[in-house]
Length: 425
Ligand code: AMP
Ligand code: MG
Image (cartoon, rainbow, N blue to C red; front, side):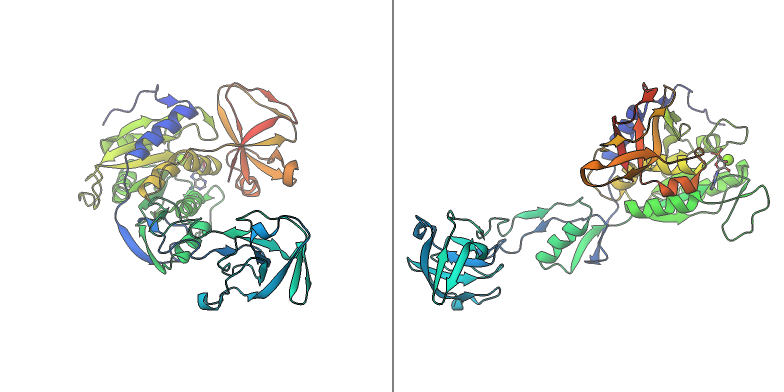
């Protein structure tokens, strides 16, 4: 049997995360596909998105009011002659030209007339028939978006590698793209292990547990831009585990859940070693999720022993601890950056926000903790409080939480009122 990694490969949270990020930076997505605009929402853009015209294409009024020449308003109140009204969508040939002393009523989104250089908000005017009195000074440029002030025709608005969130979808729509190129979703094999685990459509015996990890991981994979491949549950028995790992290695990334602790039947690492696995870490000083494993297997070791469809030389894997909360947390902390890189996303750093702690936390030193927590309050009074949880098996408490409080390994007591780092979920 192949050698297992040294026990010394238990890393600090920061080192483990950096290592994963370094590997992620080397990974490339596998191909592109053309999809309808809305199908692309949440996927990763695979082409630059260019401005097909100037933005805005005409000097655009940003307020309802009067288009004016700022120079006519040396002193206020000033009275101007109203020569017409310009609606949004008014044709260029219908827009009048302003002479000194003149103004035109104008609506938000309408083209500002030539000769005008500012819009006075209607709130600062008083209309009297053909005349308007302006009560407030404006400077040249006020309330008009100049031609191309947002983007010039041909300018790059989005780069490949961005996730198509609602703002990016708006950009694509604004340049008239009803179809766009996205990266192909990587296939992510999900393999839960454990003799006590039964599938969700099987009535569990008294000492059996329903498989939740396969489904939480599949949902996480989908949210991150991957295509989950759900494998059958692997028993704690090497022959069947070996077969299922061989199947899993046909995917672009492998997520194993359970069987990575120190128990006699925790076989995942030793079976992976038979596939010439290289282990980068076999534990991280975190809670929950300390036994998390990260490594890779050379391509061509899968069941079909075929070379990868992509140019990848390795299939990366994570052995995530089976306790459901540990599985979820370790996916987010470590597996997600690798998956995002395979999905074509430009790497990003993990960002911790800060929130005020509602009640004191006491803990032990030595581990970076990611404790399920609940943000409450609103606006500038947002507070955070640990979810009442009964350890890393407590799925219901995890489901009520909406963030994690992050506790550095050197802290034992954190007082109420302290600003603590949090990771949003
Ligand atoms: P393990 O990491 O295999 O030692 O499992 C740790 C704990 O997580 C045990 O209590 C398991 O019963 C539980 N567990 C493991 N896999 C799953 C799963 N797929 N769904 C729900 N619970 C699981
Ligand atoms: Mg197990």
